[in-house]
Length: 457
Image 1 (cartoon, rainbow, N blue to C red):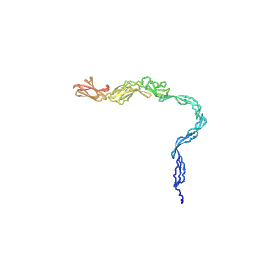
Image 2 (cartoon, rainbow, N blue to C red):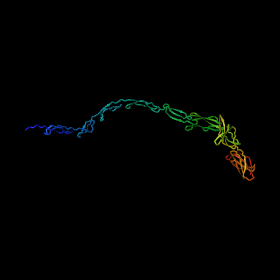
Image 3 (cartoon, rainbow, N blue to C red):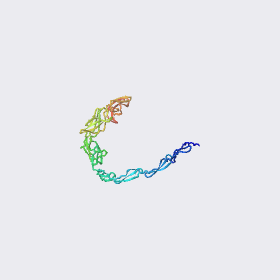
Image 4 (cartoon, helix red, strand yellow):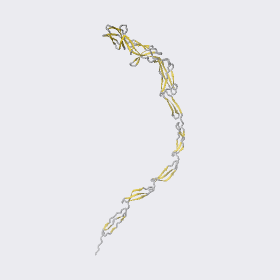
């Protein structure tokens, strides 16, 4: 028998097993595929252990107590908990908990920044007062003053008390400014120290100084008009207290007289007012007239030095002078026949180079005599027809008589210059005349009659 040489092993590798968090693993080895001999032993790999991560804080740790937190394995998901250590105090620098004052001690300590607990509490000594001066104030007329003092700037404690000084009161003086015409015055009480006005009374200005009458008619008696003085508020001032009056002498004759008003009391200044005495109004105005003139007459006015005659024009309402005379009559010439004219007379007197006029007399309506009518008579059947010339601003009255020297009867009046008579018997002779009349309403101012004219029918 012949021995054969050994054959070599046929090596086969064993599969490795990875370890887990809790289970061991195995490294790769080998064995013979024929005989199973272990050619390379597989080594055991220990468990890897859990790889924990914090997933939640279950109880926070404080400065003095431990906390806890939840853990989860990031590989297998296994969960567990663990305790966390106390944090311990985190002290800051020194903090003044109570500042010392002038009257009390203070404190300082270290504080934990997390829990706020104080440590190492230390006393701080009391500070001294910081004096500040309190200024004094002098008293015024109305306000009290105070003395100087001191207090602590820090705690406010009064170190030296201030004392009140009473007000001095006003030192009064009365000032007076009198009122005048158009100027107000005042009486006021003023303090000579503070210039305050404690009392003031306004004196209204004098606004009006008037005489009760500024024109009188001469009658030989003395004239003494009353004086009224009124202030700006309409109050009448009192004579003797607020003003005095001085009258010019005489005051009887025609002329101009002064009244001096002197203000007094609360007022100052003077005012002169004047009044006049004028001639009386002329009376008894009469007239006579011709075709081209009118003669006016009137009664004598006592004290008058002359008279002026004025004509009134109704269309304008104005007067024009037609004559001045010292006599008691005046002739107005160069007028037209049959015209109406209205006149007044004013008396005047001259004194100290000034003329003083009376009021106009009552108006006097006058008229110049009309032209004498020249009558023409004709017939219209049995009626007579009379005509005549224009004689002025007239009406015409027609008269008839059976005899030339007999009694005449008025047949009628007309504004025209033709008049038709009643019928007469044929062969009858009658006598006519016409009178031109200037009338005021129903009153004849003047007239002129024609010659008698005979006519046979």
